[in-house]
Image 1 (cartoon, one colour):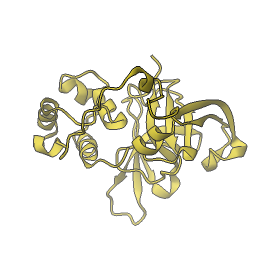
Image 2 (cartoon, helix red, strand yellow; image 1 turned 90 degrees about the vertical axis):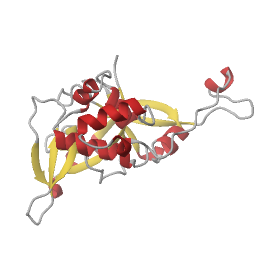
Image 3 (tube, helix red, strand yellow; image 1 turned 120 degrees about the vertical axis):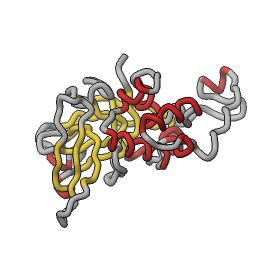
Image 4 (tube, one colour; image 1 turned 180 degrees about the vertical axis):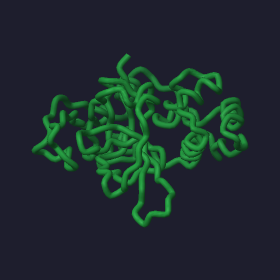
Length: 233
């Protein structure tokens, strides 16, 4: 997904208001995962006028600030052959194999280096989805398994993350995988505007039982940005 100023504005306003995506979704009369799906999975692609007005009221801004300038065109209906991956005038949709890794506890900041990982599975995904929807190089994508409950309710134990390992400088509020000194964890990060010369980051969990903490930016080893999540049902 390309950088979207509307989505980034919503993330920033949520942080300022001290709201998580679950709380905001419920406040605008949607299901608990609505904003997570909109912000992280690009679904829906744009907010409806109703949702934009309700969300603007919650976040203290004008509804027009949450409207995209252009609404995406509707997709044309396609036949059965196209839905199965083969169009009438084209061959099968190209797939790429994305490795799912287990990472050793002793991996350190180079957590995805070859000597520290074991490939446990391979996910075959449409190449175009990764290149054009995700804006990423398929060769840089890795699948990692969520461990623990620090990101509940957004993520649960056993969910999978598709991580772009080339994105080491994510925008404020984006979900990242980082090395915290003990292992790989998934968190959200934001810069802390303080007077110190060295940049400081705040590392945030979704679960309120896990306290946020700050650390020097140079001590945070970001492995990559989370493009998509695959949730267990």
